[in-house]
Length: 467
Image (cartoon, rainbow, N blue to C red; front, side, top):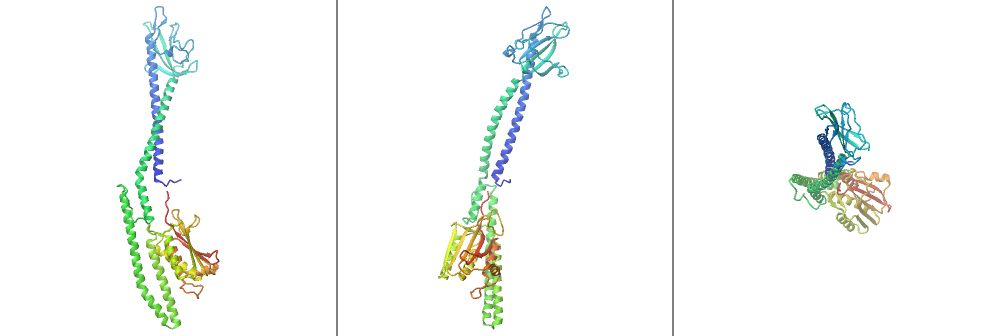
């Protein structure tokens, strides 16, 4: 699963790295300590071995004599795994000397092939004693007198001493590393959250711009983020200038064409009927085409702007008030939910689309028109589906005669008027369709619950956050 949060990514990476590093460090230190403990244990046995050698001699009667005092009570306690043994070698025979801890038991001795002597004529190996202890043996052979009589010296130590020491050290080490690791992760998390806090401020500033509460990224940003904030502000200013320039050019073009088209329409009235009707229809078509392309140019200049935002309730209330004054015999209802619903389009475009639908509904309604604006459900998308886009559903419904499916298809064609007895140019629904399409929305016509026509607009809402 892809992690979208920058904070979560950094925390995950630092957690994984810290865990791996601490585990490797713990294993390395534990291994080094084991090797050091084993070397120390072997050195202790070697020292004890030479203490025994220095304490044993051959007496006048040819017997081994001596009472090594190694300063460790474990050599006097039975079955401890700590023993010493002195045995005669060669043709020289006498009773061996053993430590009190060994008694009459024997220590297994491997062959020289299995455990060879080193350059100091010493060898070290591990065996199991009669009591089941795993013991480390230090062994050497020494000539004791001028007659060449020699003896084998062996000193053993219980390996469990080393294992217990290493186990105790490793346990303490892992506890210390675990505490250090948890503390480091907490400190890293706090440092990361503190370090990324300016990004949260920048995101909040962008939210204020998108909500229409601000026109620039404002805040005390650190040196690393300040260039980004400046570039975003420059981009917003550039976008605003482009929008204003497009609006100005659209207005200039509209004014420059308005008069010639009006002259053509006036002249058409004084011409004979056949020619006048032709000129009038063509002039009206020109007027609709000009308005359509002007709308497209203006919308294309600003539809991706973060500044394109209109609060639905006040804009729709103004339209309803105007329609109530113009149609005193028709009841107009308005429903907006939630109250602070916002549409991601220019107020002029919202009023033009909804105004056309209201005029059409008032023209055919018997007594009632309802306008509603709600948040669209997850299954309702515009022409351009997006996980970050909210959608708003605007519906205009009347209690007029309504339209059949084939009539709905005909009504959406530019300039088509299904009822020639009603005033109008037949361009209203096509203009609504074009404007909604430019905003990646759509227009749907169907029969409403009152039996009349229901016009539903799916329009983009204000973009939401994605964590």
